Amino acid sequence: MSDNLGLIQIGPTTDYSLNTLKGQVSEKFPRYKVETLEPIVEPAEAYDSFRDQYHSTRILVILEELVKTTHVELLLGVAPHDLYVPNMNFVFGEARCPGRAAVISTFRLKSQARSNPELFGSRVVKEAVHEIGHMQGLRHCTDPLCVMYFSERLSDTDRKHDFCAECGRNVMWLEVE
Ligand SMILES: [Zn+2]
Ligand SMILES: [Zn+2]
Image 1 (cartoon, rainbow, N blue to C red):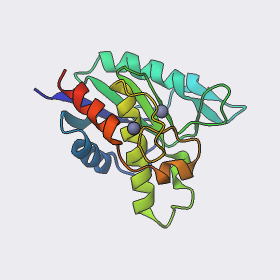
Image 2 (cartoon, helix red, strand yellow):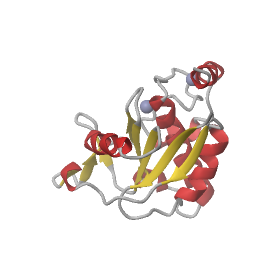
Image 3 (cartoon, rainbow, N blue to C red):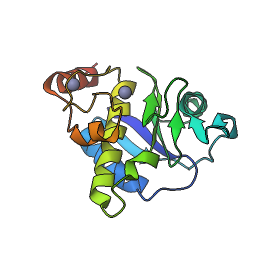
């Protein structure tokens, strides 16, 4: 039996198509049937006009409500907007860990990648895989090459590659529950 994982655009589409991401995520997580859901508008209540950023936790609350009304088990939002949580200048994404909702932002992933769509795309996939790992219960990993390493800056994301052996095993283990 396969579980369903939904990808949902939040606000205007970015240069990175959800269909491309769908293919990449399907390869990484064969357990899931990945699909794209109808896009939603960015939630006004998550917007901080002083910071000109969206509060990612508030978006998670909305996605958690939304996912209950769908047939998917997990829901990953993709937003072009810059995200933050209090006490941090920004975040690349946030997820319930474990849980059913996560969000990533493509806002900062374009830096120095405007003429390099492959680099941009690989960053989007890494952030998506990272947040999906969190939804499955994986915590941050201390291996800087592991996709579950916490990205504080873009160079962290670019250095990351895939699940380390241990996180990979944990993902496998979580898959056979
Ligand atoms: Zn994380
Ligand atoms: Zn790891």
